[in-house]
Picture 1 (cartoon, rainbow, N blue to C red):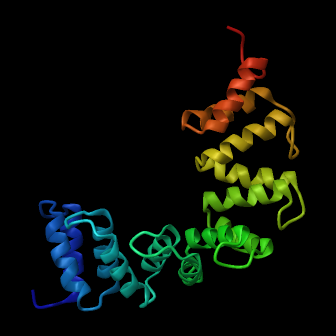
Picture 2: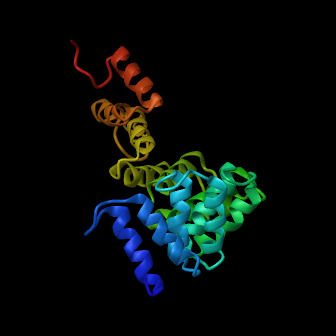
Picture 3: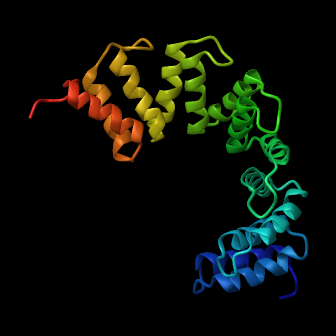
Amino acid sequence: KQGHVDAQNNLAVCYWKGTGVEQNAAKAVEWYLKAAEQGDAEAQTNLANCYMHGTGVEQDATKAVEWYLKAAEQGHAKAQYNLAVCYANGTGVEQDAAKAVEWYLKTAEQEHADAQNNMGVFYSSGMGVDKDVYLAISWYEKSAEQGNPLAQANMGYSFYDGEGVPQDKAQSLSWFSRAADQGYIEAQMMMGVFYLNGEGGVDKDDEKAVEWFTKASDEGLPEAKYNLGRCYYQGEGVAED
């Protein structure tokens, strides 16, 4: 109540989570606002999230962007990332791929793995920047080494197709395996492809292929369902009824 910014933000978090007090999103917004108006980047980001999702306050994507921008300009990584997403999708602001790249880059330079992966996507597709598959690989690798499963899968696809790197099915398998072990369903489906075809240094193993296709299929991936159906139709790796 004396205007201590950290206390205001922390109290808001308590109301947000219902920690030590009855959960109350509107109260959380009230305290986030007090801290945000004093320039606290964390509170500004939290307040923006409230506006973005309409939690404790009427949903207003434009206001969310305004608060993200205030925090992003102070170097707050999460705010920079969320602002980039807004520009990429045209949420609360006019869609602008170049602006999205600008904010993703600021975030990526702070070792934010999701932003690094997204920089790879933009360079790979040429959205908002000149297409550069080598820079795409560089960003994918930075993110993948931090354990980001999307980036690991993107590294897998790059080595599989020889896009920006020499084609190397063994390297591809290694990256897909890391992503699949984290539950990334597209990587699980690709693991099935490797075992079905006997690629990347693994022996053809229809049963393992079915096992991986099943994991991804159970999560709803259409391509995995198709491949699993094909295995059943051809009797590959499945017992006859």
